[in-house]
Each structure stands twice: as structure tokens, then as C-alpha cells.
Amino acid sequence: MTSNGNENHEPCSLPLPVSEEQWQAIVHNDASYDGTFFYAVKTTGIFCRPSCKSRVPKRENIGYFSEAQHALSANFRPCKRCKPTHQRLPDEEWIATITNYVDQHYHETISLSVLAAISHGTPYHLQRTFKKIKGMTPNEYLQKIRIEKAKVLLLRSDEAVFEVGKAVGLSNIPYFITLFKQRTGVTPEAYRRGRNQH
Ligand SMILES: [Zn+2]
Image (cartoon, rainbow, N blue to C red; front, side, top):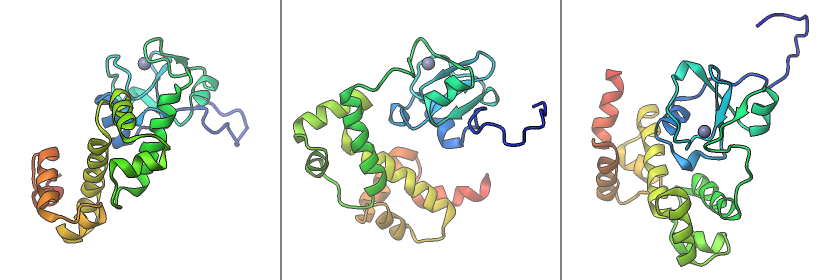
């Protein structure tokens, strides 16, 4: 960057490097991250939602913005395919309140009826709409978040496996281990052992 003597350069004028979690969301077109950030491709000058089905750019060529407006201010153009500047539809807003709730309360007992109650909908309508927007059921989303949080705890703490399960809302340990294995291909113990091999 050239210096123009102005040390207080605009915040958000350049995209920030994406985290590993954001990168994975981009690679997997993960719609559950839509609205949480936008990624901008420096080589093309275009920005996208995480779920965009366009070809995945090289990681070193992308950065992220928390708001579409920031990307526009930095002279990136919205992608014609995923239309990142379009307002979210009412259903998307509704489902976003659910995912925000799950993201913060994953360690509590959460059922479909709890989610329906906090979002003022019926369980039936919630289940259908959630699946339509996110491509998975609310319960699948909840378990996905729980396993992601468990992975972080396993790598960053020395808490016993049952403590980790409890901390993410899966206090039935055989179930926690089964679910973890289903989603990651390894047991929590093996996953933790692997951390020293990276
Ligand atoms: Zn796009």
C-alpha cells in the first residue's frame, strides 16, 4: 500500500484474510455462513456469499468483509450468481434468528419445539423452512455446531472427553462419541491425539 501521509486509513477498505473456518465454509458452499461474512476475490474484483456455487478461488486471492456495504465501498462488484447485495428474504431472516440462537445456546437442551417457541413459529413450518434454506434440519444444524465446538475444545483444552461432550450439550457420552465419529470419521480421543501430528 502506498503511503499518503494519512495514518488513519479507512477501516474495512481492504478485505481481511479469511480464517480457516471461513475458508472451509467457502470451499463447501456452506449456506449456514451466509450473512455472517462476504468474501472478495482480489483478482476479479468480485465479492460473494460463502454459499456461492462459483468456482472456488485460490485462498491467497481472497479476503472477507463483514458487510456487503464494505465490499462495495472498497470497489468490489457483487457476484451476479449469488447476488450478495440482495436483501435476505423474510424466511432467511427468520431462519437466521434460529441459527443465531443455536450458535449461542448449543450447550443447552434444544428441541424443535424450543426453537419454534423462541422464533414464534410452528415446529412443522420451522422444520420445512429451515431445511429449504439451509439444506439440513434444525437438529442436523445443532449437531453440526456441537461437533464443531467439540473439535475446538478437544484441540485447545485437556478436558476429558465426557467433559467436552457435556460442554457442547451432548452429555450422553456414547451418543456424543457416535455422533462425533459419524461427522469426523474418528473418535474424539483419536481426533485429539491427531493434534500433535499436525
Ligand atoms: Zn457469487
